[in-house]
Image 1 (cartoon, rainbow, N blue to C red):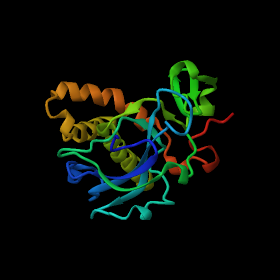
Image 2 (tube, one colour):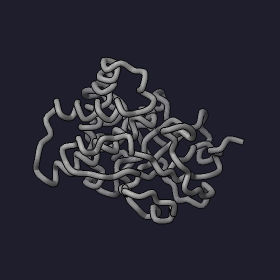
Image 3 (cartoon, rainbow, N blue to C red):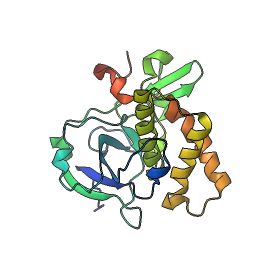
Image 4 (cartoon, rainbow, N blue to C red):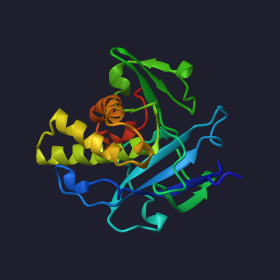
Length: 231
């Protein structure tokens, strides 16, 4: 049986100790983030099943081992599709709790894809492109993209969202070049990028960063449409 079996929802502690917080434009000293992870396998009949992760709007300097602290917390950004998290090695994520999936109130999120004026959304666990439902951009703009995320993009997204929110509260704009340097610094510090050239990481930055910066700040999205297209 897989360590991450489909009948359970898992709560993880995500290490952020590789990130040089002292080099960020605003003072932050977080060392850990936290998330919920599950497979859609038992929630719908669609195959192949997808994995979904939600990162909580809760970070800490010291490791938290009681996952009940997380229950009821909001997301830092909307739930996203993901690959299974790392369970071994230097960059492993630690399981701090789990619950039977049928005991957790889960609403499968919608995801968007498209460009320019041609947009679609995916729903009901049918997370493949030919199941897309056409929609006006303004009806889906607040949704997360249907891209599948790895641990490096999840950790970059955490930093980007924290900085977006902080810069807005301070009414200070971070220049594009600085955003690119921040994203490069975060990815360069990731274990899975240890053998990548700087040029390759810059390419990752150019592909990942624009969508992250254009995404709505989650706490500003009306609760009734979070994770749901406006139909």
